[in-house]
Image (cartoon, rainbow, N blue to C red):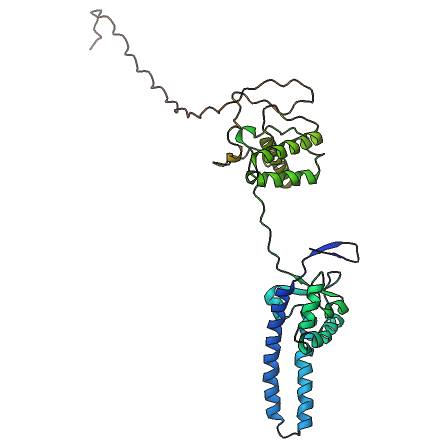
Length: 330
């Protein structure tokens, strides 16, 4: 990164282009310019073959200045610092303050480029780029410009493992307003690399970060919860709060916990077992007694069979009347 300060005292993080990419862009530009120069010179010389040698030499010098000097200046001015080679390599010429260049910047760069690139075959430009901290050649120094990279590869977001399922929803009442961003960054970096560290080093780092987090929140961690699992659960809670703050909660009530991904609790496997029975509620106040909890493997989930509706009772036939010997009239 290069710290460029604008007129409004804003620090810009720009990546200066290094020698290999700049050299490739210059080679592409010179190849195109020389091809155009040779074609134009051949056509003009054939059209002015009747003139004397001095006139032909004057025309050749004029074409040289127009094609190899004037055209690059015009292209950089009209394209705001992007020639064909720079466009291919993803580069751009900008001012020292990060703004777009103008005609005077392109003119100074083009005039100095005749000496740096054409007369010395690029030796002066290479030496100046190697000496400069930003990779600038002499033309950039005199013009007050800088060649930067436009196409910067995006950094992949580091994967933060989710907390164990038995810690979901345990920190909903924790006050995280006093935790600084630097501590959040350190915790996320640790969680993304804890499986690559030595077990003892990882445990000590988790304990230290957990102590710093407890000092900021003012609430001790639940007893028996591993430090790494505690950090992951608090980071997960903060991410859930940020999501609810950004997108809202359509249901109006507490957001449902995210179902755990199969195998996601691998970083917190044995000896980090889940508590048995009823899990304790959110953090209590400092100094409040915490009920002891026994820890062991969670009970397997046993699906219950669906209830079968009972059959309706059979109809009871009506009792028969005793015979009285009375017959109804016909």
